[in-house]
Amino acid sequence: MPVFILWWALIAFVATLTIHVVVWRLCRVRREMLWVFILFLLLPMVVTSLVVAFGYAGMLDALAAWLVHVALSAVYVQTYPAFREEIPSFRILLAISAAGERGMTQEAILSLFEKSSLFADKMTDLDNDGLLREVDGRLRLTRAGRLIARTFYHYRRLLGLESGLG
Image 1 (cartoon, rainbow, N blue to C red):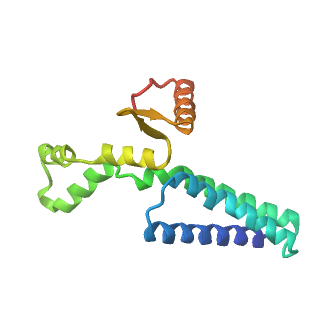
Image 2: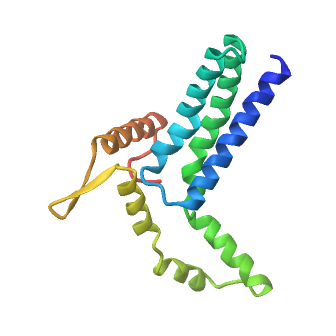
Image 3: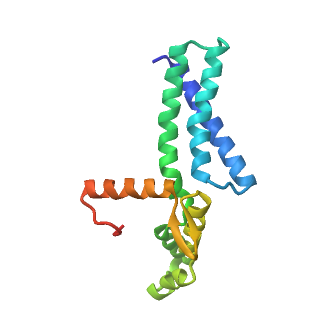
């Protein structure tokens, strides 16, 4: 693969990542994962098609650059949900680090989570992403939520993991 294809893909990925960071810092995006998917996977496909249609690149070169971009984007899209969450392990590490040499007791660490909004924030995220809705005071999965839940259920069974344990 020629080096310029790799450069195209890297520049496209960095540009997409920059757009992502700027937009997310400026406003609260609903259906976040849908827009991450559109931004990182569909938008580059449209741009690549236009580049080829207007004759700025050959079909194979553009396709190769797009595939490298998709590979980078797929890794980012898979890790994005984990990094945007307030991960309890990281919260503990940051708290102990902030405490400095004096450290923290186990009770002090546990007290960080007694008033935690981790669960409430996750419910809000699931609602914003259109994965659940409230009907008659009860939470129900949407069609997309059922699809994701079933996918993860079968994936966990394939790995030999018990349902709901991690």
